[in-house]
Amino acid sequence: MALASLGSSKLRSFLTLLGIILATATLIAVMSIIHGMDIYIAQNVSDMGADGFRVVRMAFIGNWDAKKFLELQRKNPELTRAEYEFLREKSRLTRGAGMMTSRRGTVVFGAGKLEDVQLRGATANIAAMTNVQIDQGRAFTDMENARHVPVCIIGADLKDAFFPQADPIGKQVKIDGRPFTVVGVARKQGSAFGQSLDSFAQFPIEAYFRTYGSRAGINYVLQARTTGELFQAQEEVQMLLRAYRRLRPGVEDNFMIVSSDSLVSAWGQMTSAIAATAMAVVSIFMVVGGVVIMNIMLAVVTERTQEIGIRKSVGARRRDILWQFLVESATLSAAGGAMGVLLAFLVTVAGNLFTPLPMSMPWISVFLGVFVSAAVGLFFGIYPAYRASKLDPIRALQVER
Image (tube, rainbow, N blue to C red; front, side, top):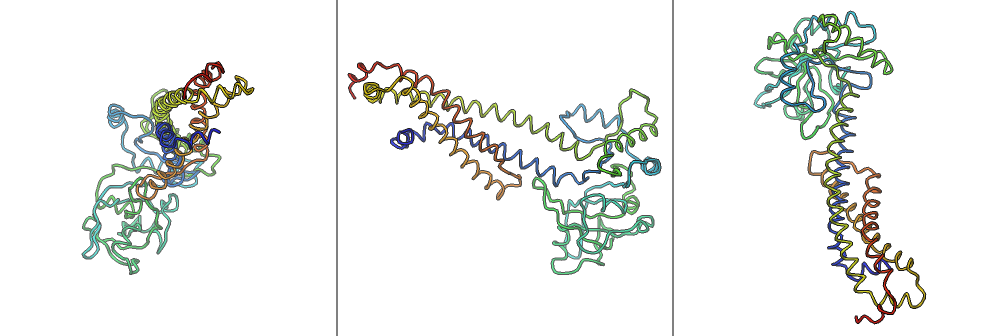
């Protein structure tokens, strides 16, 4: 009966449900974006692994303002090579330590030229400690690093741009005007939020220092002996670096330690705020949609007064009439929720095809969207159903259609 009521006036039903459809689609689309980005952050953005962490001068974790940034920039000194050697020598809970820095520059091969390429200076073991996996050739060695040998590993973007049909190994490219020999090509990583992860050239950090002269922007990449000792290893490195910098008890660290867990946790804090804001907006849509449903159901009760009178005259009880109109309003809004789920699914597919945003629709969002929309219809249908159930059958039969 509820479905027949919906089908009898399709246009009115659709217009009634428009608010519910948009609210449900918005809710699920936001959840899909957050869920997809959560998965992406966990799998791709953090390249430290389950047992890895980094020591950096400062990192944007949580809600920072410009004042906080300027304060840390003034307070936190640059990390140095001497501190790196100290940590590598003294740490007992790490099984690997590397040093790296980076800047933007230009890479040229023949007539080809790529600008705004990430130029990374790194110790030889960095490739094994991050997600830079060698697809062709090899990584550079400790000996090449110690001797400032101008060799490099290039990302897939450089390989595709300069050597689409040729073997790049042994070829010479110019990095900011200086020749470097390609010894390896990294496996393709894809992109993050529209930014390619494959537009880079990585070469020995000593060659980097000789080329650019600056020691700024250094960070350390470390690995705990086991995943279970990650927290203890971070505490040990923190203690060692505080001791080296002679920081007194109670004085804040003038460096930062970040791991995959901290990045994912910080991302979770940001997305929870986004989700809360989205829920507030969706709640307004839902309330407006519920009020519209209530108004329409009141009009339906008026239109079907004679029907209610006939049902009561042949034995229908008040609760039968009450449940009839409650089920109709809940079915009406649940249908809107289902349409909203379909619209959100189409938005998710289109988002993955045409935008850099990674979107993934969690099944819980489908259930939540339909359940909440049905609950809204049920809640806002109580008053019209109650009015219908209280109609006097004799008066109802006397109403002209």
